[in-house]
Image (cartoon, rainbow, N blue to C red; front, side, top):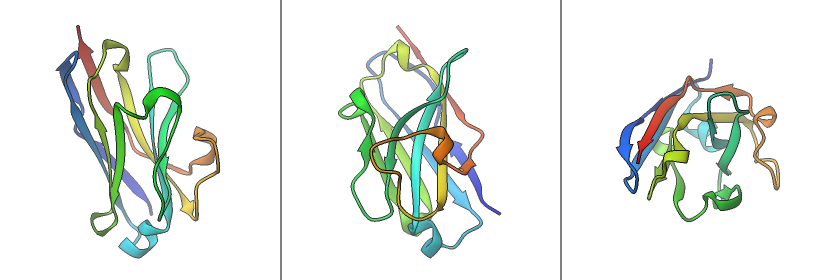
Length: 129
């Protein structure tokens, strides 16, 4: 059974930083290393949107303007995915989710919720002005 648990959310003032973590339980580190992982966020009343995905053995693939302020990394030995968020803005306030695909590479050129098979419960980020 695959379980994802996010942590690191909280309240921060505009311009601040947060680092979110997502730990995967169930599969071995070898199997974790073979999965495409991603971060999404969801604002109230809005659809879940992809921020970035990171293939098993390649550089992250960011969606639109998130590259630069957001940095996605993974530590396969710890089965952990990270999202470093810098220069946060009030419009970044949302529930942040990590997700995993079945073993294999990422979908090329897109970060869609429908492409991901396992989800965490989310961690709330609130940015005040």
